[in-house]
Length: 189
Image (cartoon, rainbow, N blue to C red; front, side, top):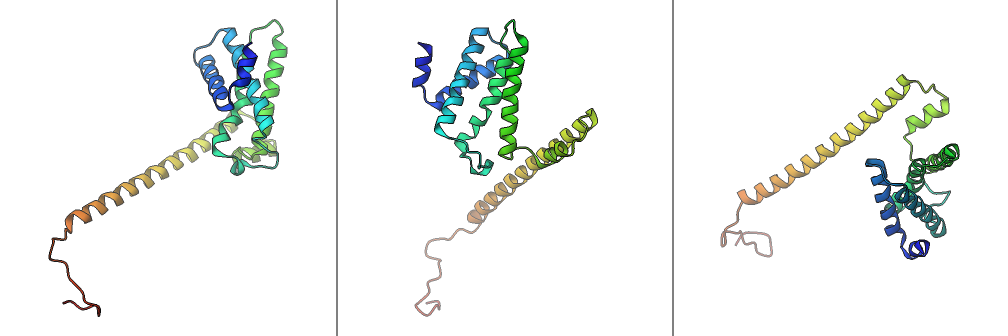
């Protein structure tokens, strides 16, 4: 009966429900019934995404509709929730979770969602040492901070422009009757 209820739910609502379960399970932990319900909902999301053909193998991130971007996370959420399932056969659970994570990563690579620096490091087969990971993390943080600073600068310029436009409008009032009236030849009358 639960499955028939999920069949009637549209993808956005089902995804929202599943992401709330994922958030609850990762932040505070959740009981096994809720985790399994989340896995079932995410599995249904995967089926719906596939049937609707939201993502194509010949697309890049620029081709994906903004409203559909959130659905990229379905395999990732499913991998994380699958890890939280408690069963006797823990190795099988971890293999299933790992397969979903690999699916997510290959999808991100196909859509060119990974930063170019990280792709180059992965292709070169650079060691995965702590120092290398730290350097990548620092570089990513610096890029993020630079982007945030640029955004703040743009917002400040926009605010200054708006203030100066308002100030200019206030400081040069035109009183009624004092406007220069021009005739057809462009000369004052």
